[in-house]
Image (tube, rainbow, N blue to C red):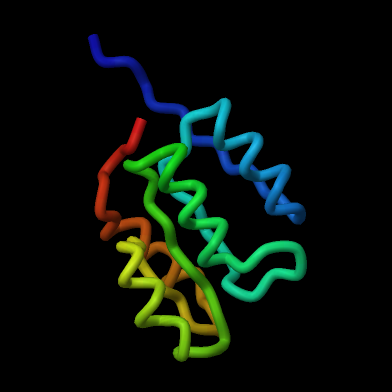
Length: 101
């Protein structure tokens, strides 16, 4: 019998708090704003990748100027604002790593 997968979603406003959580818990997908006050989303993604190499990183931004750097660090996706539910679903349907953990 296969165990049923239970998906949970957590939201953070403090990148440092998010990184502490990721360090101690599985993480399949992280949606990150690129422009954050306390920490750049690209830097946060690099730290997540060190902690959880199979985590899928999906960036969201109003600007495409960060897209090249985002894909250089091997993100799973890049959403441009305004974002629709179908955009999010499309990214979730096409993750680099199906289930990281």
